[in-house]
Image (cartoon, rainbow, N blue to C red; front, side):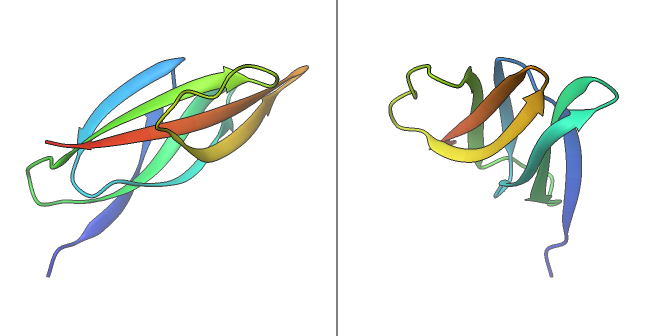
Amino acid sequence: MITRTIYKYPLQIITELELCDPLVVHVGMQDGEPFVWIQHANIGFANTKLTLRVIGTGHQIPDGTTHVGTFMDAPYVWHCYAERKAL
């Protein structure tokens, strides 16, 4: 049986991660910094390159991405979009 765990990663304007079957479960602020929580398999190899992009309200959404969360950093509201590519 493959075990899955939720891990927390710092979130930048562009964040690139290589993980096994990643699923974004939350984006938010913690101690004044943005983070993303991702569930993924613990099998020792990555099969997906996950690129996360943070954009502000009113800005163009990158082509080929899917919305995975929104978070506030007063007075701004940020939106996180993901692009997945098989490795």
